Length: 408
Image (cartoon, rainbow, N blue to C red; front, side):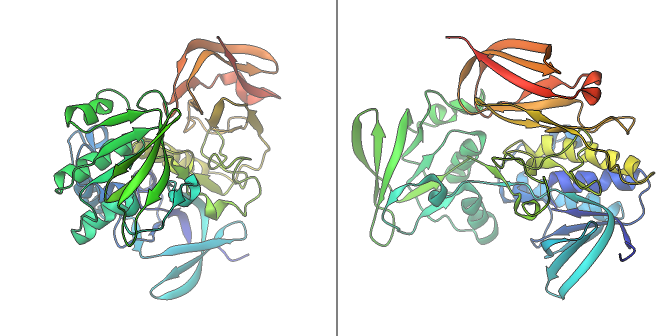
């Protein structure tokens, strides 16, 4: 085995990756290398031409691209070795990564590796929308890249599909660059975004159709219209673009070949309460764990994992097996999904994060060895975080399970 020349290698230069790097340097870790496949740090936030970013971590409000520049400036000032335009091809053994860059291909070895590759939106193909294949069908990320990096608005009257927070971001991007959406549609009975952002379509006068599904895209050359279904009624709506928003999935391609790197169903990286994967040299943070949280949440998560890794470096890698957290629909995911006997003084995750796949009214409970130690009744909605304290006794339990008892 090649002796590692790097203390901690971080893959991904978004808020989580940068925050982890800053925490490591603050804890005195000498050699911290941050790899980013794009030309600049900042992740998806630098595509956003609107605010607010940075309120909690910097006590001020930034536009997305300014926030990205602040992250990069802080990383470089802290002594992090930043390598942009570096893409990780695959992991090599327990402590190596194969990296491609304009300089060529090389293998880097590190004592610890943190994956912070974020999440991506589901494109048209993944949503199984039929019809023609014209120009003008994009995701929010693609739209914001067009605007931020090329100054181009690819349509003037798009249909926005989805009502998550990123959907409201798409509305702001359109309106601030001369485009006006013809409508926003949501398959559910209510907007997914929280108040007050869920009011944005109404405030801006954009029609907002609930319980409505996009069934077909029409157009020769570019988008001309769409077919929408509401209940048993199908109607045609003229537009010149379709913007698919939300339905984020963690970017876990690198982890797919690792043993137990991603749980069944692909919810995100399978980590323990310190952010550690099954391979004890590997950690993960940010939206690679689940789709999706805000940039500020990812920053705080990355910082916590960075502190945990700094503690972990003081001893050998923790090779003890953990207990996987079990759950069933309508619970969609649980983070962390693995609990190990506590080795670090302060775990990176003090609470479980849950999501449900559909609106649910009922009681969610946490059971350790078949005994309920926490439960709460409520109305649970998709893409809303549910936080459950991780009890101290969880690290000694043989089984850890979440249950949801629905109330009709």
